[in-house]
Length: 247
Image (cartoon, rainbow, N blue to C red; front, top):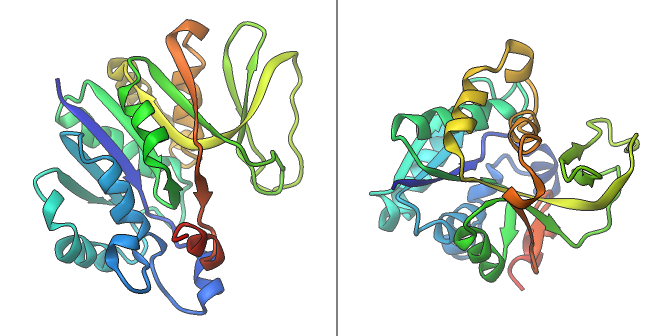
């Protein structure tokens, strides 16, 4: 049974570049040791997977150079693909491309993580070892100006809520719990995931990765998934955030 991980790193990292006043790709940024880069750490966390699909876009040549120079120990697992729509589509197209690549190798399990995160290994291993599909949460306050949140309604269905304008969040039904998303997911029913991916219309292809995530998890009953929390979780939007990952 082949297992695959998808890491998406296509974005242009505007806030991060502004925070260091330099043009760079956030996931490969480091100050002293390349092993301190977010991408190296994420690939290391995923090293038990048979294949690791890295979806790039912005500064793609720099990404390829970094992989060729610094990720040689994982070379037999890595698949790198380019998202040519990183600038005009949302984050969902990167996930779409990653899932298509996993479909080619007939992956029976897929883990997906966004590429600008620092995550602790103990929590990450809980996701890997979980026998069910999984959504993740962190312990940060849920604030509309920066959070992607999800809640579980009375039927046990997962619903994601977010505001691209970072204005406010709204829930229009009773709910059992609300969480700040850890932005890592595990899909154990890849047949269902592949069907969802193949059925996306143009508007959905141009949307966020939550389009695919929501379509998958809203079909699951509460006993078919786990909610796993990260003990350490940093979304590295700026270099200040990144430096927290080095402590």
